[in-house]
Length: 150
Image 1 (cartoon, rainbow, N blue to C red):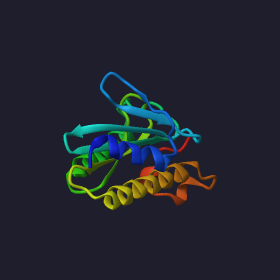
Image 2 (tube, rainbow, N blue to C red):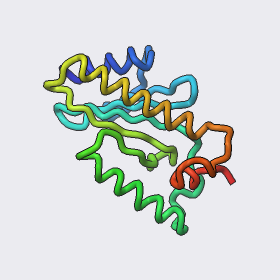
Image 3 (cartoon, rainbow, N blue to C red):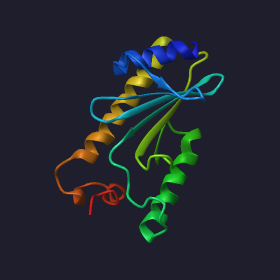
Image 4 (cartoon, one colour):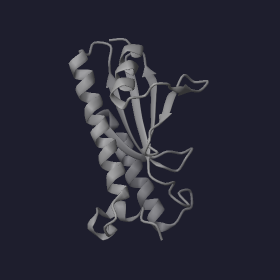
């Protein structure tokens, strides 16, 4: 499968009619509920999907004790990308939470790509819904507890 074919599948699954793009060839779109989807080519046979959600994390660059721990966990999570599908991180430009998945598309079947993108969509929906919950953050994971509004 070619990169443009895979992007067309992403467009259809997220119902994106028109992508914006930048000088690096990265395509992005904002969905109705403020989720930003980015798609770009990581290598010749790799499509990278990224979904950003939630409000920017205040003072994400400030070196306090919680942020140092959070950065360590997110960096460790990013390193695991080579062995695991999705990586939860903080986008450097926006300060928003992001989940990223790399998909090898060159020899992938249409069914594999569609299943992988569907799984990615479910993951983005999960994180977005988790952050928007009205219930107490104390019932969430310790990592998410760091993101609660003060």
